[in-house]
Length: 89
Image 1 (tube, rainbow, N blue to C red):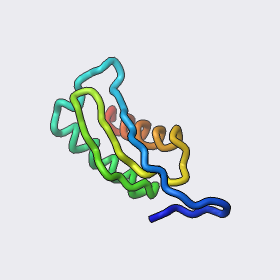
Image 2 (cartoon, helix red, strand yellow):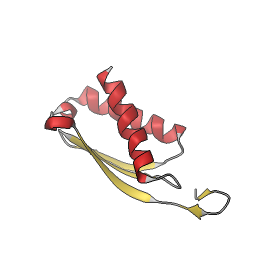
Image 3 (tube, rainbow, N blue to C red):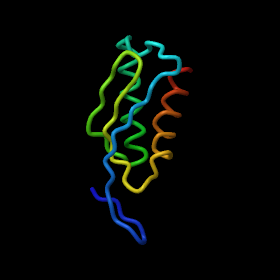
Image 4 (tube, helix red, strand yellow):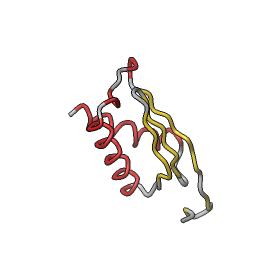
């Protein structure tokens, strides 16, 4: 679905890559991958930013997400900030 605001209409599909600090291999564990994926889809639903694809490596994650009319830093802050905080808890 295309996002609409008072003066603009649009979609913005972006590739995002989030790397873990100090290259720790946190995504080598399947439990962490599953929890992270669950969090990404929850954030995606709450903030209306559909995710098309998610890929994991041992120390980073790739997202293909439609951030719609949000800025790239705002979308990155939502995904990386919320997920990082929940994983550390």
